[in-house]
Length: 165
Ligand SMILES: [Fe+2]
Ligand SMILES: [Fe+2]
Image (cartoon, rainbow, N blue to C red; front, top):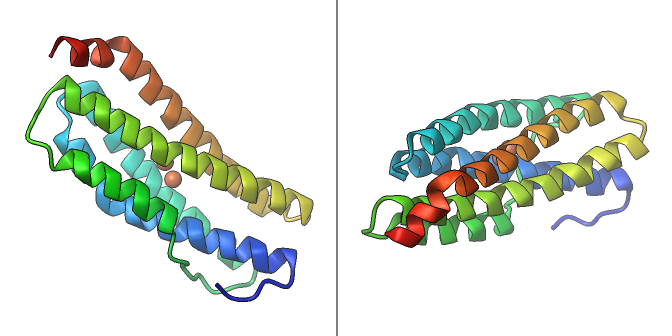
């Protein structure tokens, strides 16, 4: 990690971390949506994949607004969360059991993103970067919405189905 000397350094580092995380997700989310059985879950994951593309663009816009070149910083946390999701994707089982497992994996992703975007949104506000804060806040609310939808789908029958399997 580059030496941090100011709040802006810290902020740019965190944007680079999120940028790397979102780009990794763009490779994994489509594979998760292909693997699940529930049509509702599949379409929720597909929709969030489209939103994730937009999250990447928004981060690029934030770099621009901050007068910096877009630069990714390897996000080891997201790599770990994705590695665990890969273990589930490699299972031979199908149906609600795998759906329930993948909802859990996807919610770990969302919670990591919620923590990251919550943090950078507050930092942007504190630095008086109101437009950047607004852009990041948009993504934050989509992450929260995605997380809430996953909870609803889990409670709406997928967890029960997994128990019966
Ligand atoms: Fe995202
Ligand atoms: Fe997300």
